[in-house]
Length: 141
Image (cartoon, rainbow, N blue to C red; front, side, top):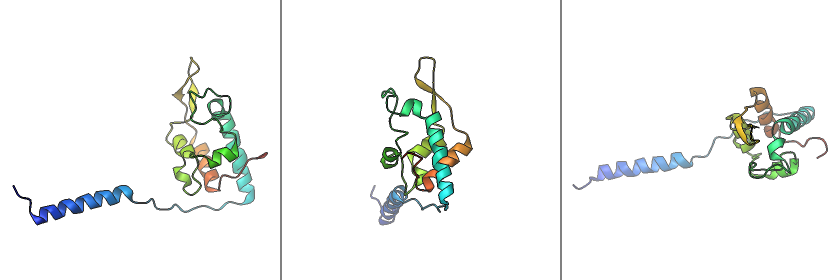
């Protein structure tokens, strides 16, 4: 059976549309503006959050077998890592893993991080705002 020119054209158009859809760039999100006082408050709030909910598994000295990162409290290293995207804060792994509930995890009875322990929405929003504000440094960094 010989394909017609119209059928071949439709096939090529469908393939082109699929390729364009898969490589389409994300529309930039509008950025809120923050005062210096708000940035400082966000920085301290995020530091407290990271220290209380993330550092057990993601700081220097944590069992590396469980942690993808071991520098969660090192502001400079964290902000320069692949987990933070200041140009697209809403796509930062640090935010998306908390937003979708993948992180943080609680340690189970064997001491392994296995139990999902999602952050409250307010803390997830604070993390996003911190990223949108340019991930300002917390005190001491």
